[in-house]
Length: 173
Image 1 (cartoon, one colour):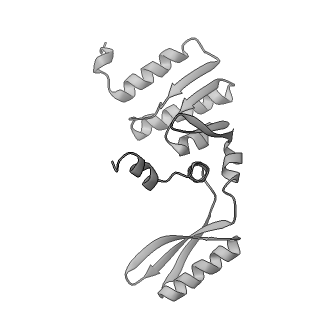
Image 2 (cartoon, rainbow, N blue to C red):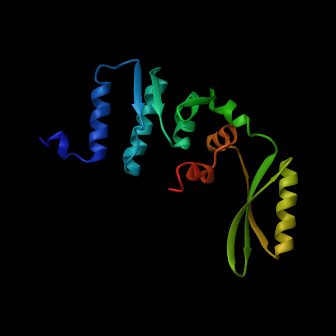
Image 3 (tube, rainbow, N blue to C red):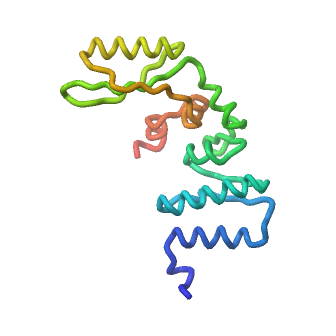
């Protein structure tokens, strides 16, 4: 009995998506569907999108959240200022940055713990660099993870954009 205007943003979003799905369409357009949603609502909506995808529904999804696109999309178009920079599967886009290997080392000292990333031609080379750094700094390596490239890594490499560049282009805002 609550008027639509008085619903929370999450409830409005859920109601809008539910209304769009009533007729069981084969094609859906979702523009930034999880923006402004709380964690639980966003997770629920992503699960629903995943189920629809598994049922064969075609979904055009726009999002600034690369993790969301990586998890939900079969194909991704990377856009910069309205133009398509790259269009491919998530795996193929990530393969563009699969040169060498990156490890994340957790280093400890009396001053505390820090996480640093090291890149090399191979995992062994990256590990060697991490160990040399730890030794030079007098720190102890307490954990080490190999990192796989993400869609965000691919976006940055393929577009040449970084947070610093984007801020500069927007006038430092």
